[in-house]
Length: 218
Image (cartoon, rainbow, N blue to C red; front, side):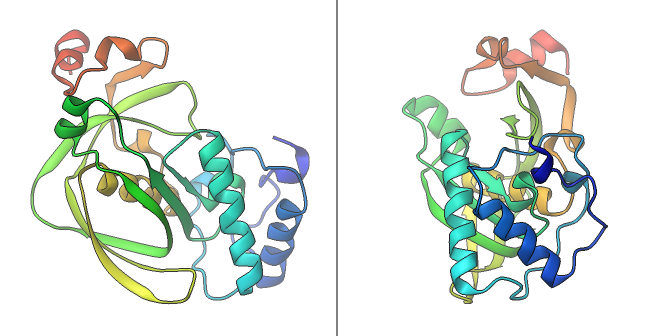
């Protein structure tokens, strides 16, 4: 990460003026790098978005976040992952071609979605345990148990607050990105004995985690 993209010198909370300056500096530069584990911005709850950015700047920020997410590639990106401590995340998933994996994980396509100041609650008792990874923790995956279905309330870039139900993999993405906005990484919730390098992940690439449970004894 370049020095001007580091959040290490940031106070716990930025003023509106400092936030705008920070965003403008990122938008005026090259495509920003993804912040990785160890940077304090990933461990602080992001600030509530309450209009610190005008509509044009917010739109530019969303566009840059989408580009970073797609180029990574990933299916979600939270603003703190590019060093901006605001409760904003972008989501998008094309799904997978393998029908068995798609069915087992309820991995349905998720259209491009922007969530601002999201909060969610479980919609039912079902929990799913699957491998997931994170752009801010490159090179590894681990099993995380999450709610299968959630009801999320968030604000859209047009200012409209909506409530939407997410199921399966889209629900997992929303939960993962909301964790980022709360200063959490997926490893905080992971079954650590399942931790697998990307180089070894092919061993456990089936629809379920049953093989990994047996092989890694978790």
